[in-house]
Amino acid sequence: MDPVFERLVTELERPRPLTPQVLRHLSGTYGLGRDETGRFLDEELPRLSEEETDLALSSLFTPKLPDQAIFADLLGRGSLPASEWSAWVERLQSRPTFGCLVTEQGTRHGMALRTVTLERYVHRLRLEATVPLAVFDAIRASVPTPRRPVLLAIARRAAWTTPDRQQILLEFLANSSRESATSLDDAEALLALMESSEPESVEDVLARIPEWEAALKQQISLSRQPKPFFNLQVEELHGGGRDQRPADTQMVATKQRELAFLARLRTALAD
Image (cartoon, rainbow, N blue to C red):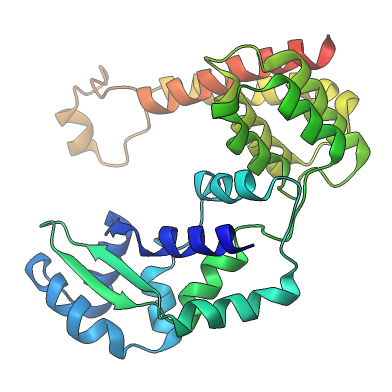
């Protein structure tokens, strides 16, 4: 497990730019101006409680799917039991492990990562999970090497808890992996669907696709319609009865992509 631990250190210590979400939290909670952020990171952040530290940095140190993919690739079908996590966190802290936060101005600020941050990162990597053997073999057999880490990370998520749910992923892999332009996006979309709607089987997915499509089409239709005004003066500024406000094109485009994914999913699962 030494390569996994070494990669943990590398990932935790890589520079992390402060996101708008973090900056809003710091501004709203501590009244910081943009030119005060660097001083706060150096002088005040180390003095915060564990809870305050977690609130401030949680979004930066919560692993996303690409982070999980790094470790899924290293582990293969292996796993790190949850019973060993506390020892790993203690080992990371005793080094110590230093985070690197980058302000909007590009200045870097180092800090020894505290237990709450290390626990958040380690506990959310799904190190305890494994990949069903049939799914693992399917990924190795049909997925090009550059795309395997993300597929392995998806396969390690808790969505595939039963053989029937695993069959959904197996059918998807068998019929979609050759389409390199869309397969990774579709795999992530399938994971999101599994985690949000929790279908039980291939048959369940196919039966529910028309319902999901109808809901998306309604959302697209509503997004294209002018939103009601609640103030006559504002309505006049936008052309009165000739509403000149642009439609929510980003929302429409997102829903159209989801519709196209459902069509591809139907084809993949029906084959």
